[in-house]
Length: 170
Image (tube, rainbow, N blue to C red; front, side, top):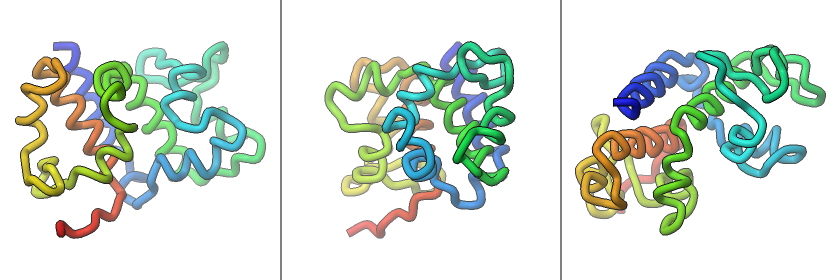
């Protein structure tokens, strides 16, 4: 049940973010603008330095919401849309509870690379790029995932494919 709540809250956050619809890749944005001073990948920074307090994302040890903090963060100079993308990205990372890291990374590369290399989104479904296999159905019997975890992993893959121009199927 908890995984279903997490999935729904992630979906709502993603669908309600105006910045995501504008084509900003949160991974590229983080790696370009943040990784030079912080952890190389957003999940590392999120897990080490950020926390959710209710619906509010804050830096550990601070009371200021992360979006307000980032507005005055030195050398950041992020637009409002970029701030929204990063805050949404960090929030969804924390809400997923590290599921991909805990259950998938032992056999597969980072979710971003895996999704963008091997998966494609078509008609609101995540499919194997070369097999056309429905990934949600496949994950039901893969990696010791329970049904709620499989849904969460599909949502993680969907986020990785958002704002990524997918090459045509060979």
